[in-house]
Image 1 (cartoon, rainbow, N blue to C red):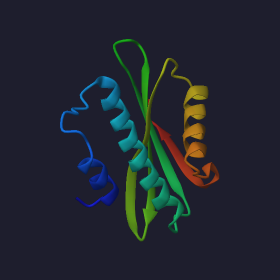
Image 2 (image 1 turned 120 degrees about the vertical axis):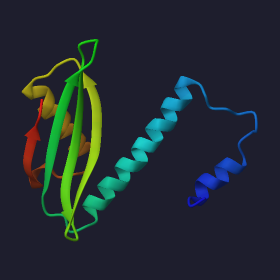
Image 3 (image 1 turned 90 degrees about the vertical axis):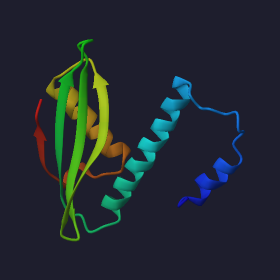
Length: 123
């Protein structure tokens, strides 16, 4: 296993632990989301990325809630990178909600919104 910390944890887990409850599964998923997001943000902040663009899209679910996805695109070492930064559910689909979610996501992840070159909304 590549991650020595994870390997250490796995060697001490009781054999009867199944981690099948919805709460545990959601916690594991959230931990993975945070690890991936941290890796993306580190890649952006520790490289020569001068500009980035954002792409947002939303779709309504059967409960009439809007599921919004925010992806970031940037060039690093001559290679275009595109990564999903956030997926959130909201009751509203308006400019104020999109703006608030976008700015909050960027500031929470220490990504400077002032170097955003363009923002495309597909909703």
